[in-house]
Length: 235
Image (cartoon, rainbow, N blue to C red; front, side, top):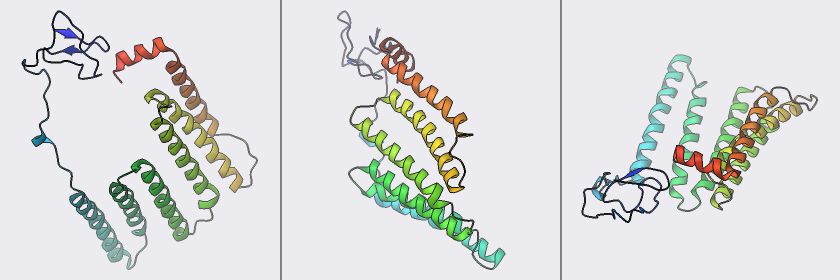
């Protein structure tokens, strides 16, 4: 029985490469035997699930209409009008748009999903501010916070697709982005309230996030530690 020279996974007699990391099997004394029974199950084409966009659209419409109708009916019967039901129905509309529209866009689904999510979430929160009449908080606080978050996510997606970030540095960038976002949200809140631009609660969130981010970047830059982590976690 051979073992993978990269990750140490036990290989079957029929394996010509590692099923986990796809490293070629190197054992001159025991070459792969294609006729030997496979050590791992192989999914046949008949077992593959065929996705239907029409079926998915029908299911999403059904999942959207049923709870929306229930909320509207209960709100109307108990209160004699529409009040709280607008919020769950708006959230369901937002979920429906973010789920269905990117499916019908064959290219750049990631960026399309980000853009559609930003627009629908912004529209929903703006509706909440308008209906609740709870003061002006959307444009001074929520909108710039959402815009910054989606810009950061879009840049991380772009760098990952260009090969500038790997899985480990994506995680490091995520922690750094969380810290930056928390500090930005506190600044936006203080600007809206005309308070001094200082950090109070955000620093307690940003400090551990930045520490984790720097630690992960260091691990990624150290080849010995990175290879040991890859070998142990198989990521």
